[in-house]
Image (cartoon, rainbow, N blue to C red; front, side, top):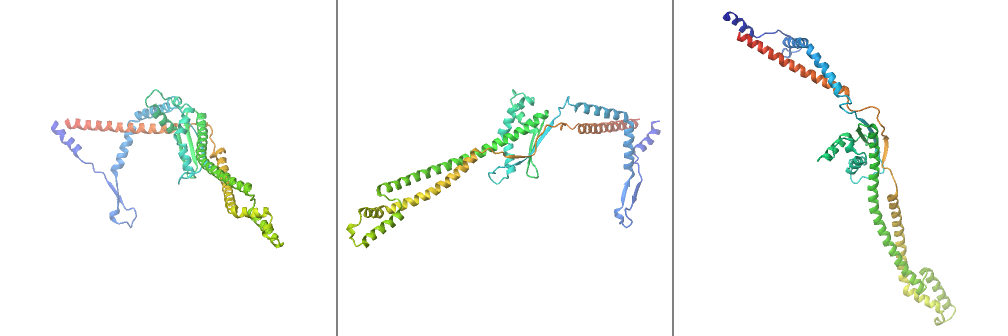
Length: 364
């Protein structure tokens, strides 16, 4: 009995099924080597796959319903807190770059500074808001990572800066954006004030030096005026010369020239050079002092002025619609992944079952 049935079974197992192949030319003028072959075996494999789905349709339906139900359940606010996004679009103004960077790049650097981040964390008590245990050894690292995951600052293609903040409370998200812009203005103002104060100190030192120089020259000129009566060298020289030559022209001797004229001429001869030199230096120092004073006053205005360094394109507002999570996407991905996994498991079970049947047939 075994011998009679073993031959047909072996023939059934070892025989290779030859499926017909269809070949044709895509275009009548194509060469023969470009014929396209369609293996009918692919068609029957697809048909077999459809039969497999029909066979296990109940199980697949159960998996589909379970995956839909669980994904909807676990994506609800009970398990995933919804987050709301508030944003602002800004352009920099009154920002002076320090090197080759643009004003927008400098704005990005300031927004990403540690003091702005730490001030926000402290003001909004984000450690408690994010439910982070401060007794943990690495709580600050976790806090920074959580903050960075909720805050996004980037440059747009139009050289503006966009700030986006996610939070479970839409009002907090909006307030954080406003406060971040406010802190940026304060930091930019402080940097400019510090730089202007350095320049102001230099201008003040130069102004004081010029003032000392002016005082010294004025003192020298006052001594010449008081001790030698020289008030205006050019005018006094002209008048003294006229008086001198007038006396000589009157037929009188030089000894009879008035003593005041003679004394003035002697003073002009001995001290006139110093008077001219000190006067020139005094006028030059006065011009330099006026320029330094103008620079000092300009720098002083830079120190005391209150400017804003941002221009709003879009102002932040509390959002009335959640941004995260995208529930339909979670449900879709979860359902598709579950169905694919279920099909893989079914195919493995079918393969094991067929292998077992063939083994039992061969053993029989």
